Image 1 (tube, helix red, strand yellow):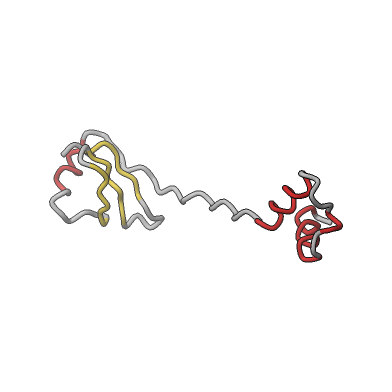
Image 2 (tube, helix red, strand yellow):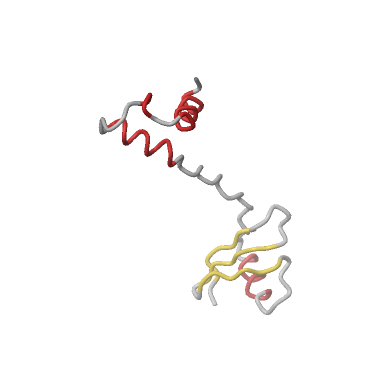
Length: 97
């Protein structure tokens, strides 16, 4: 097994992901399994475990009512004043009105 990279997967450094030529392996840290020996050799070669990086913020869910209203207005099917009050208030809220 050849280790390609390792990364902490939590801010407390209690878990790591180890990328190997055989795939990705999730391990507790410090490692007490048979993986310990190859990891120690890999670290002795000057390699380091990459720091934890929090996952990116999730993309907000699209406002489907607003998207539909925008499409209908763009096609000339309706005007903003034709839309139900709930949709108009969402549009105004998003526009900061």
